[in-house]
Image (cartoon, rainbow, N blue to C red):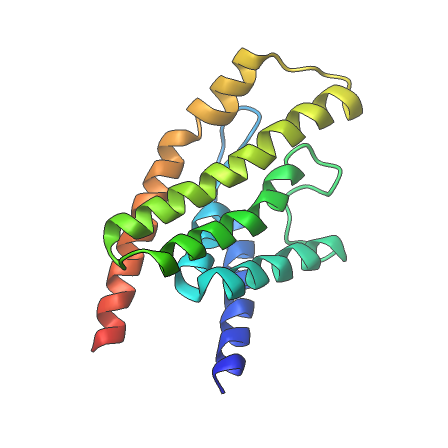
Length: 173
């Protein structure tokens, strides 16, 4: 029964990540979405194993052609989507291995988002340079792909910590 519940929750988080794709705050080059909030929450809520499974379901749905991505696998932003899987896993790992509290959950979310950045930014650079023939400099990458989205991602990590705190209280009742 527990496995069935986890699989249903995986499907729910895959759907939430999809919904988060379409909640956008436009910025130059890279729109801010709520995907990352649901990606890290999948790991925090479901743990590293099922969190990563939920993101794999989302990625597989997009790769088979369902309209869950804003772009395609040839989009320069696809590296971020690839980073969602280890990002969710790391957030879940931290939530499982350390004391369950707001700080742990927020740091888990931040670590998950850092992994997404670590895979997304080099992929964007390489796709831009070799596929789109538009090389971006280090300053542009730093400003548009780290400094501009960072406040929003810190806020989403804070929000993930608050959501986990609330879910933990609800579970205890």
